[in-house]
Length: 281
Ligand code: KMH
Ligand code: ZN
Image (tube, rainbow, N blue to C red; front, top):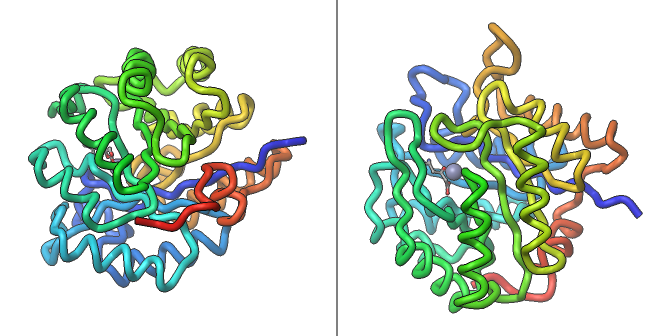
């Protein structure tokens, strides 16, 4: 039986400025519209970064809670909050993201150079995020920017146990300047390392910028799932800015059909991720 394709949309991120990328959803209304349209096209998970009234990245607890509530109210998407935030966000604020009670949250498995910045993820901080998510019944998406971070994940699970519910889900973030390249070869190397994680581990992959297509094709060919969106990709093709997140989701849906692995519904996605038998925190 073929595995359906879990499609995650990451619509906003923390890196692009609204002034430079006007199609970026930055207000709650823009985010909700994007979420509903992407769900209708075939996305099942939304990876959420929010912005303040000046369109700057924020981890404001009130705004995060309101965002989770509004997305739950108007969509059936699995809401995954970013605990990565922006490279400048302090650890305490990143941990406090969990207080908004999402169904999922990201947990990056190591420090990585991130363009001109450093995305700092100390071991103790990772352990804190992992154990707090266990306590609150929040499913982590382990973000992997480099091959060795999969070994760090193996160590984390060996020492501190599986996430609540027992399912492990990984997202390969490829092609970040400072991380692993966004190539089929690098993805296959990660795929091999994922085999050393607990049985049933699922993975998605995203390629930053122009690596989006090779990464998507390689993920589809190796039983992987897809993450797409304007957090990672703002050029649809050379010289063609992305018009909307829907355009990226539609392309991923099309490729998933070509691969004969149609998009997972939100219900199928919850089954795949072991979320269907539990309630959100
Ligand atoms: N914005 C990056 C520094 C995550 O969301 O967890 C981190 C990031 C990863 O986007
Ligand atoms: Zn993110």
